[in-house]
Image 1 (cartoon, one colour):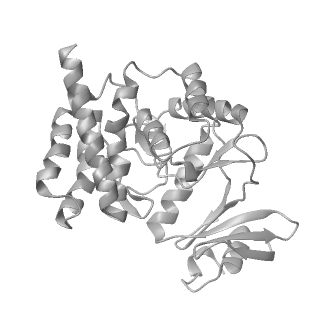
Image 2: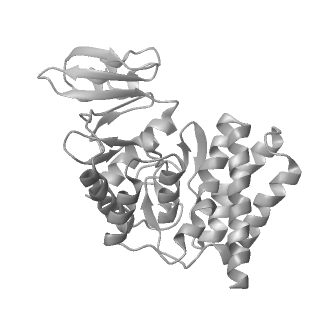
Length: 299
Protein backbone atom coordinates (compact mmCIF):
# COMPACT_ATOMS: atom_id res chain seq x y z
CA UNK A 1 0.00 0.00 0.00
CA UNK A 2 1.10 3.58 -0.56
CA UNK A 3 1.00 6.00 2.41
CA UNK A 4 -2.09 7.68 1.04
CA UNK A 5 -4.04 4.44 0.63
CA UNK A 6 -4.06 3.31 4.26
CA UNK A 7 -7.34 3.46 6.11
CA UNK A 8 -8.01 4.26 9.76
CA UNK A 9 -8.41 0.55 10.54
CA UNK A 10 -4.79 -0.31 9.70
CA UNK A 11 -2.81 -1.82 12.60
CA UNK A 12 0.66 -0.67 13.81
CA UNK A 13 2.48 -3.63 12.25
CA UNK A 14 1.05 -2.89 8.82
CA UNK A 15 1.69 0.84 9.18
CA UNK A 16 5.33 0.25 10.16
CA UNK A 17 5.92 -2.12 7.24
CA UNK A 18 4.28 0.24 4.77
CA UNK A 19 6.01 3.43 5.92
CA UNK A 20 9.51 1.94 6.36
CA UNK A 21 9.42 -0.59 3.52
CA UNK A 22 10.71 -3.28 5.91
CA UNK A 23 9.01 -6.47 7.12
CA UNK A 24 7.95 -6.49 10.78
CA UNK A 25 9.00 -9.34 13.07
CA UNK A 26 7.44 -8.27 16.39
CA UNK A 27 5.10 -5.73 17.97
CA UNK A 28 4.50 -4.73 21.59
CA UNK A 29 1.52 -2.49 22.29
CA UNK A 30 2.31 0.13 24.92
CA UNK A 31 -1.07 1.83 24.93
CA UNK A 32 -3.97 2.55 22.60
CA UNK A 33 -1.89 4.87 20.41
CA UNK A 34 1.72 3.70 20.75
CA UNK A 35 3.49 0.47 19.80
CA UNK A 36 7.10 -0.71 19.88
CA UNK A 37 7.80 -2.54 16.63
CA UNK A 38 10.81 -4.63 15.62
CA UNK A 39 11.73 -4.56 11.95
CA UNK A 40 13.43 -7.33 10.03
CA UNK A 41 17.11 -7.09 10.99
CA UNK A 42 16.36 -6.11 14.58
CA UNK A 43 15.93 -2.34 14.26
CA UNK A 44 13.28 -1.07 16.69
CA UNK A 45 10.88 1.77 15.98
CA UNK A 46 7.97 3.44 17.73
CA UNK A 47 4.69 3.55 15.83
CA UNK A 48 2.30 6.24 16.99
CA UNK A 49 -1.29 6.69 15.89
CA UNK A 50 -2.14 10.37 15.45
CA UNK A 51 -5.38 12.15 16.23
CA UNK A 52 -5.63 13.48 12.69
CA UNK A 53 -3.56 14.52 9.69
CA UNK A 54 -2.53 17.85 11.21
CA UNK A 55 -1.30 16.14 14.38
CA UNK A 56 0.99 13.66 12.65
CA UNK A 57 2.19 16.26 10.15
CA UNK A 58 2.98 18.74 12.94
CA UNK A 59 4.84 16.20 15.05
CA UNK A 60 6.90 14.84 12.15
CA UNK A 61 7.81 18.36 10.97
CA UNK A 62 8.63 19.41 14.52
CA UNK A 63 10.94 16.45 15.13
CA UNK A 64 12.78 17.09 11.87
CA UNK A 65 13.14 20.83 12.61
CA UNK A 66 14.57 20.15 16.05
CA UNK A 67 16.90 17.51 14.60
CA UNK A 68 18.12 19.92 11.92
CA UNK A 69 19.64 22.11 14.65
CA UNK A 70 22.10 19.31 15.48
CA UNK A 71 21.86 20.00 19.22
CA UNK A 72 19.54 17.99 21.49
CA UNK A 73 19.04 14.46 20.22
CA UNK A 74 15.70 13.68 18.58
CA UNK A 75 14.40 10.36 17.21
CA UNK A 76 14.69 10.01 13.45
CA UNK A 77 11.38 10.04 11.61
CA UNK A 78 11.08 7.07 9.22
CA UNK A 79 7.71 7.99 7.77
CA UNK A 80 4.31 9.44 8.48
CA UNK A 81 0.91 9.86 6.87
CA UNK A 82 -2.55 11.02 7.89
CA UNK A 83 -2.84 8.41 10.63
CA UNK A 84 0.61 7.16 11.64
CA UNK A 85 4.08 8.34 12.64
CA UNK A 86 7.07 5.96 12.68
CA UNK A 87 10.27 7.01 14.44
CA UNK A 88 13.29 5.48 16.12
CA UNK A 89 12.98 3.92 19.55
CA UNK A 90 15.21 5.56 22.17
CA UNK A 91 16.89 2.94 24.41
CA UNK A 92 16.10 3.99 28.01
CA UNK A 93 18.75 5.10 30.48
CA UNK A 94 19.02 7.15 33.67
CA UNK A 95 18.97 10.93 34.30
CA UNK A 96 22.53 11.33 35.57
CA UNK A 97 24.08 14.65 36.66
CA UNK A 98 26.41 14.60 33.64
CA UNK A 99 23.49 14.00 31.28
CA UNK A 100 21.58 16.87 32.90
CA UNK A 101 24.41 19.36 32.38
CA UNK A 102 24.81 18.17 28.80
CA UNK A 103 21.08 18.53 28.21
CA UNK A 104 21.15 22.12 29.47
CA UNK A 105 23.97 23.01 27.09
CA UNK A 106 22.28 21.29 24.15
CA UNK A 107 18.91 22.93 24.91
CA UNK A 108 20.56 26.35 24.96
CA UNK A 109 22.11 25.62 21.57
CA UNK A 110 18.75 24.43 20.22
CA UNK A 111 17.07 27.67 21.27
CA UNK A 112 19.93 29.71 19.84
CA UNK A 113 19.52 28.02 16.45
CA UNK A 114 16.50 30.29 16.13
CA UNK A 115 13.30 30.56 14.16
CA UNK A 116 12.27 32.90 11.32
CA UNK A 117 9.77 34.68 13.59
CA UNK A 118 7.54 34.23 16.59
CA UNK A 119 4.86 31.67 15.88
CA UNK A 120 6.73 30.23 12.93
CA UNK A 121 5.75 26.59 12.36
CA UNK A 122 8.47 24.09 11.45
CA UNK A 123 9.13 23.82 7.70
CA UNK A 124 6.38 21.65 6.28
CA UNK A 125 4.37 21.89 9.48
CA UNK A 126 0.77 23.11 9.59
CA UNK A 127 -0.31 26.49 10.91
CA UNK A 128 -3.16 24.79 12.77
CA UNK A 129 -1.14 22.42 14.94
CA UNK A 130 -1.49 20.92 18.40
CA UNK A 131 -0.01 20.99 21.88
CA UNK A 132 -0.89 17.61 23.30
CA UNK A 133 -4.57 17.18 22.48
CA UNK A 134 -5.30 20.92 22.35
CA UNK A 135 -5.28 22.99 19.14
CA UNK A 136 -2.39 25.44 18.82
CA UNK A 137 -2.33 27.95 15.99
CA UNK A 138 1.09 29.04 14.72
CA UNK A 139 0.37 32.62 13.73
CA UNK A 140 3.46 34.76 13.02
CA UNK A 141 4.24 37.88 15.04
CA UNK A 142 7.08 40.29 15.74
CA UNK A 143 6.34 41.63 19.24
CA UNK A 144 6.52 38.93 21.91
CA UNK A 145 4.22 40.48 24.56
CA UNK A 146 1.42 41.08 22.08
CA UNK A 147 1.94 37.76 20.31
CA UNK A 148 2.04 35.79 23.56
CA UNK A 149 -1.19 37.35 24.79
CA UNK A 150 -3.07 36.98 21.52
CA UNK A 151 -1.88 33.55 20.42
CA UNK A 152 -0.76 31.67 23.55
CA UNK A 153 -2.83 32.97 26.49
CA UNK A 154 -6.20 34.29 25.34
CA UNK A 155 -7.04 31.38 22.97
CA UNK A 156 -7.12 29.08 26.01
CA UNK A 157 -8.54 31.54 28.53
CA UNK A 158 -11.68 32.13 26.42
CA UNK A 159 -12.84 28.49 26.20
CA UNK A 160 -12.02 27.99 29.88
CA UNK A 161 -14.37 30.87 30.72
CA UNK A 162 -17.01 29.67 28.26
CA UNK A 163 -17.16 26.22 29.84
CA UNK A 164 -17.14 27.64 33.38
CA UNK A 165 -13.75 26.26 34.43
CA UNK A 166 -12.56 29.83 35.04
CA UNK A 167 -15.08 32.38 36.29
CA UNK A 168 -15.35 35.75 34.55
CA UNK A 169 -14.15 37.65 37.63
CA UNK A 170 -11.09 35.37 37.80
CA UNK A 171 -10.36 35.81 34.11
CA UNK A 172 -9.85 39.53 34.75
CA UNK A 173 -6.62 38.68 36.61
CA UNK A 174 -5.18 36.91 33.56
CA UNK A 175 -6.45 39.65 31.24
CA UNK A 176 -4.62 42.17 33.45
CA UNK A 177 -1.40 40.22 32.97
CA UNK A 178 -1.92 40.37 29.19
CA UNK A 179 -2.39 44.14 29.37
CA UNK A 180 0.81 44.53 31.39
CA UNK A 181 2.93 42.13 29.36
CA UNK A 182 5.02 44.90 27.74
CA UNK A 183 6.36 45.87 31.18
CA UNK A 184 6.51 42.34 32.60
CA UNK A 185 8.14 40.55 29.67
CA UNK A 186 11.77 41.55 30.21
CA UNK A 187 14.17 42.51 27.42
CA UNK A 188 13.31 41.62 23.84
CA UNK A 189 15.00 38.51 22.43
CA UNK A 190 15.20 36.98 18.95
CA UNK A 191 12.76 34.12 18.29
CA UNK A 192 14.04 30.81 19.67
CA UNK A 193 13.51 27.36 18.21
CA UNK A 194 11.22 25.87 20.86
CA UNK A 195 10.27 22.30 21.61
CA UNK A 196 7.00 23.89 22.72
CA UNK A 197 5.71 21.15 25.05
CA UNK A 198 8.78 20.63 27.22
CA UNK A 199 7.46 18.82 30.25
CA UNK A 200 9.48 16.02 31.82
CA UNK A 201 7.47 13.29 30.07
CA UNK A 202 8.78 14.53 26.73
CA UNK A 203 12.42 14.28 27.84
CA UNK A 204 13.81 10.75 27.51
CA UNK A 205 17.00 9.98 29.44
CA UNK A 206 18.70 7.48 27.18
CA UNK A 207 21.27 4.72 27.49
CA UNK A 208 23.76 6.80 25.49
CA UNK A 209 24.03 9.38 28.31
CA UNK A 210 22.01 12.02 26.48
CA UNK A 211 18.55 13.47 26.93
CA UNK A 212 16.33 13.03 23.87
CA UNK A 213 13.25 15.08 23.02
CA UNK A 214 9.95 13.64 21.80
CA UNK A 215 6.36 14.84 21.17
CA UNK A 216 7.15 18.45 20.26
CA UNK A 217 4.73 21.31 19.66
CA UNK A 218 7.59 23.09 17.92
CA UNK A 219 7.40 26.75 16.90
CA UNK A 220 9.27 30.02 17.15
CA UNK A 221 8.88 31.60 20.56
CA UNK A 222 10.60 32.85 23.72
CA UNK A 223 13.20 30.49 25.16
CA UNK A 224 12.04 31.15 28.73
CA UNK A 225 8.72 29.44 27.86
CA UNK A 226 10.43 26.06 27.34
CA UNK A 227 12.37 26.46 30.59
CA UNK A 228 9.29 27.51 32.54
CA UNK A 229 7.42 24.43 31.33
CA UNK A 230 10.35 22.21 32.30
CA UNK A 231 10.20 23.67 35.82
CA UNK A 232 6.41 23.47 36.03
CA UNK A 233 6.14 19.71 35.64
CA UNK A 234 9.44 18.74 37.22
CA UNK A 235 12.73 17.56 35.75
CA UNK A 236 15.49 15.46 37.31
CA UNK A 237 18.57 17.50 38.20
CA UNK A 238 16.86 20.69 37.04
CA UNK A 239 19.45 22.92 38.71
CA UNK A 240 22.18 21.16 36.73
CA UNK A 241 20.18 21.47 33.51
CA UNK A 242 19.81 25.21 34.12
CA UNK A 243 23.48 25.50 35.05
CA UNK A 244 24.54 23.93 31.75
CA UNK A 245 22.11 26.22 29.95
CA UNK A 246 23.48 29.36 31.62
CA UNK A 247 27.06 28.34 30.80
CA UNK A 248 26.14 28.23 27.11
CA UNK A 249 23.69 31.10 26.64
CA UNK A 250 23.00 33.10 29.82
CA UNK A 251 19.40 34.09 30.46
CA UNK A 252 18.40 37.74 30.80
CA UNK A 253 18.40 39.30 34.25
CA UNK A 254 15.19 38.69 36.17
CA UNK A 255 14.27 35.52 34.32
CA UNK A 256 13.32 33.73 37.54
CA UNK A 257 10.71 36.43 38.21
CA UNK A 258 9.13 35.68 34.82
CA UNK A 259 8.70 31.93 35.28
CA UNK A 260 5.03 32.25 36.27
CA UNK A 261 4.38 34.51 33.30
CA UNK A 262 5.65 31.86 30.89
CA UNK A 263 3.83 29.09 32.73
CA UNK A 264 0.47 30.72 31.99
CA UNK A 265 0.43 29.18 28.51
CA UNK A 266 0.85 25.50 29.49
CA UNK A 267 -1.32 25.93 32.59
CA UNK A 268 -4.20 27.32 30.52
CA UNK A 269 -3.78 24.52 27.96
CA UNK A 270 -4.09 22.03 30.82
CA UNK A 271 -7.06 23.94 32.19
CA UNK A 272 -8.89 23.46 28.90
CA UNK A 273 -7.94 19.77 28.73
CA UNK A 274 -8.09 18.69 32.37
CA UNK A 275 -10.08 21.16 34.43
CA UNK A 276 -10.22 23.26 37.54
CA UNK A 277 -7.03 22.27 39.39
CA UNK A 278 -4.95 23.72 36.57
CA UNK A 279 -7.16 26.82 36.48
CA UNK A 280 -6.21 27.50 40.08
CA UNK A 281 -2.53 27.13 39.25
CA UNK A 282 -2.92 29.49 36.29
CA UNK A 283 -4.58 32.11 38.50
CA UNK A 284 -1.78 31.76 41.07
CA UNK A 285 0.82 32.24 38.33
CA UNK A 286 -1.02 35.32 37.04
CA UNK A 287 -1.23 36.90 40.49
CA UNK A 288 2.45 36.14 41.07
CA UNK A 289 3.41 37.83 37.78
CA UNK A 290 1.45 40.94 38.76
CA UNK A 291 3.09 41.03 42.19
CA UNK A 292 6.55 40.67 40.65
CA UNK A 293 5.74 43.62 38.42
CA UNK A 294 4.61 45.75 41.35
CA UNK A 295 7.82 44.94 43.18
CA UNK A 296 9.92 46.18 40.28
CA UNK A 297 8.02 49.48 40.15
CA UNK A 298 8.79 50.16 43.83
CA UNK A 299 12.48 49.20 43.74
